Length: 122
Image (tube, rainbow, N blue to C red):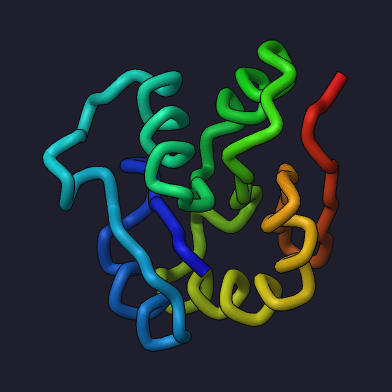
């Protein structure tokens, strides 16, 4: 899958997710640290990438605008974990939600839970 990692996630996730078979870039690698959330969403949409972040604001923006893309993966309650643990959760679960993400969805990965909401929301 094509993923765009938000700046609130470690760049150290990139090689781990790439090793898991994904095409991954990080906003910092693109020189876009500090970019406003709507612009990050636009970038993910334009580049046909799934946005991965720990920032709940992206789900709110998608709902408010009734957007149908880009898909968004919210990493919830995993932020305090080590990078390799977060990578493992993402890699282990992306395949289970691939159809939803390709169709347009918000997916929430928690400690022991996963929620899926198809876009548009609202």
